[in-house]
Length: 154
Picture 1 (cartoon, one colour):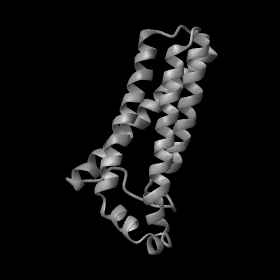
Picture 2 (tube, rainbow, N blue to C red; picture 1 turned 90 degrees about the vertical axis):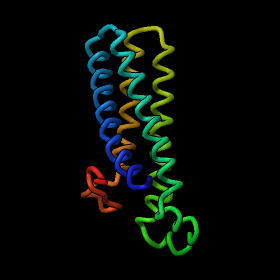
Picture 3 (cartoon, helix red, strand yellow; picture 1 turned 120 degrees about the vertical axis):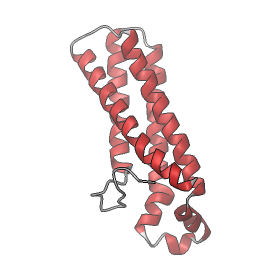
């Protein structure tokens, strides 16, 4: 099960990133051009938030089934001396949880606003902040913090 969780977690990352990039683009475009917040824009907002929640759920299940995290939790004093254990044991999950909270707040606030400009601006700003947090917390293959491949194979 653990291998499948890793695969789906690494695959779903791309859906989250694509959704956020597209939502931020739509948000800034609509805000700058003073567009109308259509049903399609609202769907982009909602689907992006939903995908991020699914990814966080997969991440939590993975977190509590991970041998890396099991070692981190069982021998914190030794594991905390190694940055990769600290990254996955605390930093990654904390930043990703914060990012999904930011997405959730941005989505919820956007849904309740009255004007098109407010909706686009709110979606653009909140989702852009979440995207920046996520970019920092992903273990990219080139990251000096902790690196993993772009997609984990089975």
